[in-house]
Image (tube, rainbow, N blue to C red; front, side):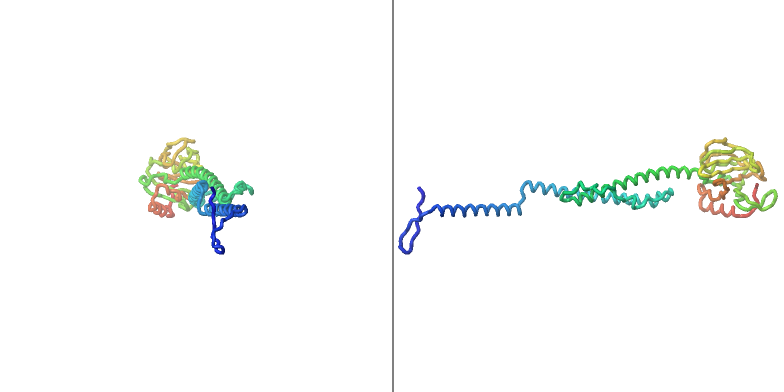
Length: 323
């Protein structure tokens, strides 16, 4: 049985029965439902603000992980850019200058990649700006690496040619210092030993006993081994390439044949006094593009600084040549 409720009436000084109407019940129910709904809404609002669901926690961790990876990627790109910048600087200021190649401009190295809409595919994301900027940096970095790779390929080819050039240029004395009696005469105006007239002497005279070894001063191909040039007697001419030719005159005998390939330091003949000569010696000349030049500038390969200074003093004396 339902409980019967009473209330005390102070006017009649008696208890009276509480009558519950449908309206009252409906009002109580409405207030209860409204209060429950309001409480539930507040609970959800506070919970969503201050508490995370498992799904939200998972997404938050994933976002944090992506941010960390992005920072690592950024740092990696920064390090790669610094290393590449250092390589590019050395490439322009050392390698390309040494091998006589034009430096690559900064604009060409760091130019962007064409295409106005190239990065539009990244639009519509929360971090579109970061994604687009990172993609641009990666594209530019890749382009710089391709340009630098091609540049190093070019430098490798130039280095190969330079190495061959350095081996080919006449760079040592044709006679060892230990075998020399003296430097009899240098390049320039000298007194002719036969006419006693001052005239141009186009080579250097190395005084040495007959039979002293004569060496090739650079890599090349022997072009002449004969005595058909007036005054030179038995002589050898070596074509070193790059416009350089060396000549060895007044020889006693040969140790090479025509068209033979020789290396710097190879024994090619022996000192003599053939042709227009008044004593055993080697007359040595260097041609550059068919023009005779001073051989004294080509002895850096086997002389010390002191020996070279002494050589300069000896060759600067205006004396009588031996041929």
